[in-house]
Length: 245
Length: 240
Ligand SMILES: Nc1ncnc2c1ncn2[C@@H]1O[C@H](COP(=O)(O)OP(=O)(O)O)[C@@H](O)[C@H]1O
Ligand SMILES: [Mg+2]
Image (cartoon, chains in turn brown, purple):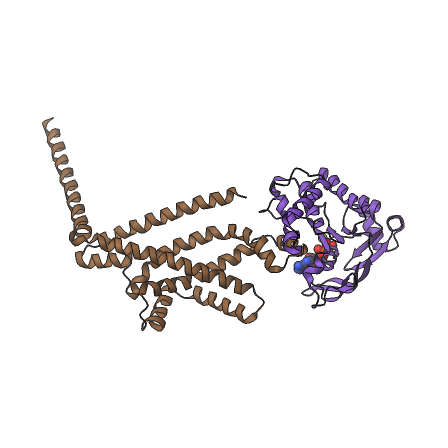
């Protein structure tokens, strides 16, 4: 009987020590990676940069996407071919390569802030995907809609504006939301041009603390929860859109 | 009213219309019958240039529809069209479906367009559906709204492409009823249909199409009782 008590006591002591070690390690990790020298600020500032980047890139991408989608619909062959080449090239090369080319080849010698350059680069990249989304959304509208509109005497652009686009938007919006979510994650390569985004913030902290993975774990959590938040908002929007059918 | 001369239409290497010449006169009701795939829809769609003919001419009131100098949208105002699949605008109410074209194309005032729409809805037997969305309507109701929508442009001629083929049988009658009313009012109409009873009753002239040509045309009485072309005979023996 006393033997059993002894074993349990030893086990409990062992578990306690392990827990204490984990807690100590964890608090050390938290202390060195976040608290000491206000290192959490690298994450906060990085988060701000990443959000900014995503926001402006989405705006630029949306605008380019609409223009390019329209360009593909025109009868002007030259404009059409340019739009198609843009989409092919953008979708056929890695975004990090595009970012570096745009930075070094075009903007490096200028005084334009890096956030702006990166926003433009990501916007140009995203624009190609948005253009495809818009095209697919328009094509998914029943052909009979255009025919009915034209048979009533509406011009092509009137039919597009009053009949096709309002229906296409319902097809396009969910994809647009997903595009913003991908952008949010893709901007993690902005450090390649020296921008101190969330990812870069983690690298800076890691260089100071020599922690193996804690800084990355921190930003993984941040990326994940912001993605989850955006997914939730998108889901709500989609449900509302479907309701209006 | 509408005249087509030597109309040809190909889709790639597929020759769908192979030389059609015909004239539809004012107040005439012409029914087009024929086997599926014979080019009836294509012919009808060439009449308002939803399909651009490969060659030939389409005239409306003597004005060439194909001459690029003439405004195709202006000419289309004169030609109403009703589709097999209704093609109502799902994001717009019945009222908006009907008033959109008069307001945007003809520049009619909104109030005037609404008043007219209410009259038309009464005429097609749907006086209380103006604020419904199309998906709340039955097939027969949708097609009657589609007819009202086309009529709102005050067309000189109405084209119908199998207007009752997508309907449940119990709804065919209500749509045919509205069309008969139009006939009585003297509307010029071209109707592609499988409703032989309707064609016989209201048609002034029947065109039997086969393999891209008008194989036979005659008054309903003659064509249904005394078909001359063996292909007409064989088609009628199958559908009557
Ligand atoms: N847009 C199109 N592209 C290619 N082929 C078509 C098109 N529209 C019709 N066709 C073909 O033309 C032929 C005639 O079609 P259609 O005029 O619809 O016949 P119907 O109305 O008499 O059944 C069919 O073989 C059909 O497949
Ligand atoms: Mg057909």
